[in-house]
Image (cartoon, rainbow, N blue to C red):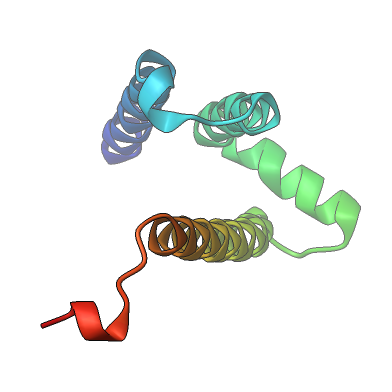
Length: 116
């Protein structure tokens, strides 16, 4: 009974996340590869929730003892990928702001004796 409720809540959360991501395409500004990866992630999440024993079988084929361990390893890798992607995106955005500030400064220079 409790397992069924947990499965329902996990599936509902996954579907809400997928719906939000797919309906707010303009705001997400994700590339096609990221969107495809997200769809694959949603399908894998639904599969893992509905058939957790399959995850254990897959883990055993790979050489991991439990399906939950495999899931943890995959989530750590996904977290590292997301963190690195965000860091790179912020660094590129900072460089764009610096270039913009330089361009604005060159268009309207203020000479030292004009400051007063």
